Amino acid sequence: MAKQILKYNQKHLKELFDKGKVGLIFALIVIAIHQFVNYDLMVMFSYVFIAIIYYFTAYFIKKKKQYITIEGNMIKKNIMFGGSINLNDVIDIKKFNDEYYLVTESKKFYINTALMDEESKQIILKIIDKIINQAA
Image (tube, rainbow, N blue to C red; front, side):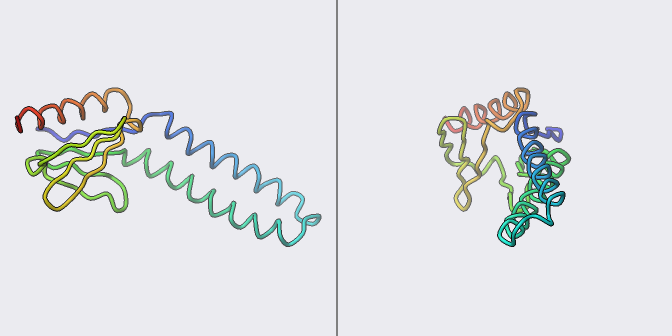
């Protein structure tokens, strides 16, 4: 099987970017009126600044790396502590709404299909059906 990259849907990425923009606008307003604000508002600004960094960083990393990479029989989440599993080792699949848990003897691999674009969602559902059919 060739390397496949399962992508985030555009709605999810846009939400991250929009949250960063709202925080940035708020931060610019606070900077513009900084001489009139009290200390408490400046402390709150520091928390907003951290959130701005988080949302923009998450947006750019997720846009570049995307959600999941499937190469051969390995499936890997492209996040900092995402982990990977071998699809041949899956012994159980649990489904709850748009969420799937691929369970091996030592790991539980979580996939949220609501975050995927339609094409990627179809690919992962075919792979899950294949695993179910092999187990039967």
